Image (cartoon, rainbow, N blue to C red; front, side, top):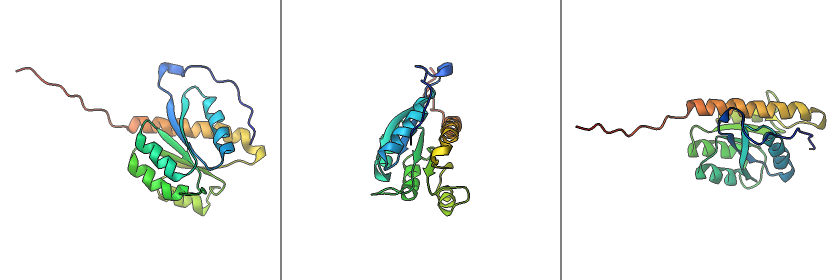
Length: 162
């Protein structure tokens, strides 16, 4: 996969902290391509990369991740097995499954959604790369915003003087 992308500005627009994303795919080429796509948007930061589900679960347990983009077919632990473990480690996590197995209506996509995926996106063929890049960024930003809106507000520890 080879993608041509514009240079990303150095800071996020609006002063909001960038969405922190985990990429999980057994292909280093795919991880790098998705990272390039996401880094082109100043509101998104890839903070972790994993080669399989076990590494993804460990990264989520360490914290600091808003959203994960994971493949289904991977060695050690596949994405469908990892999905409930990711959500158990962080119940508010938004997970987008990105796989050649997740074409619209495919059984794997339906199973991923049943197991808790927020969305599914098929990996592109070479003539679909530009549309894929736009859709990936839109999904990450949309689900990242939902994650941030639904995140619990920290309780204030206020003491009232007698």
